[in-house]
Amino acid sequence: AGKIDVGVRTLTGQSVEIVGKPRSFSFSKDCQIKLFKVTVDKGMTFEAAHDVFTEELAHQSENSKIITGFYTHQGRGHKIPKIHLIISPDNRSNKVIVYRPNEGQGVLTKTYVSSKIGSFGNWNL
Image: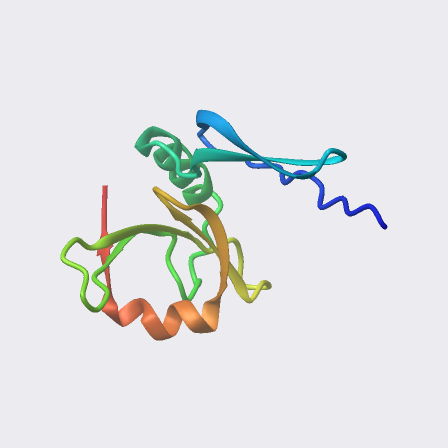
């Protein structure tokens, strides 16, 4: 017999909460598994997004292909447009930082964002 340790995953976000009591499973007297149900809000408040936008706008390059700002995008089959905060750090990098209210921070290539930017609507504050 062996020992399997799958570890514990670190969950981060605006809020992380355990919902209800854990479920326990026993496969033998030496092996017990507890299953926790958690809810995670990875997003950010509008105020936090606005602070990031304001700070990054001060560092915006004037000849950047992608302008730092808030964008909306209506995907296929979605009734409500998705809101993105796209930060274009500088022209040396091929990456942009994308913030979504319910998903938090991510990174995409400028090529991908440029190909989609036509279907994005710029939203100025």
